[in-house]
Image: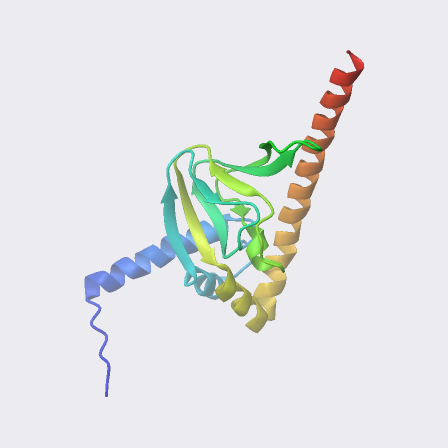
Length: 182
C-alpha cells in the first residue's frame, strides 16, 4: 500500500515558515546558537509552541521532567520550595527570572529527570517546548550536537546554582540580622 502525502502547497509553505521561525528562535538561544542550520532543523522538529497566562505554573518542583523550554515572550520565575525547621508551612522563593531566548527545564536532560524548581509565569508567556526524551535521543545519536548543547547547558546550570546560592545566602543573612536585633 502506498501512502500519499496530501499536504497542499500552501500548507507546506506554512510548515516551512513555522520551522524557519523555530530555527530562528533556537539560534537566538545561547544553548543552541553553536549549531548549524541542519542541526537546528533536527532540534526544531522536536518542538511545540505553547502559551501560558500570567500566574500559570509551567512545571512543578519534584515533577517528572519531560520538557526543556526556550522562552520566546514574557518572564518566568524559577522558584524553590522552602520550609522552616519543624514547621509544616512551606513557601517558595524566587531564585532566578528567565527572560526572552533563555532556556529552562534543563532537568529534562539530566537523570533522574525531575524538576528541581517550579516555573511560574510572571506575564503571559510563549514557550518553545522541546521533548526531553526525543532531544536526549538526538544528542546521543549525534555527538557533535550533544557536545555543543551540553557545553552550553552546563553554563546555564552553573549560573542557576550561583543565583540560588546568592539568594539563599542573602536570605540567611536577613534572618541572622533579624535574630541579632531582638
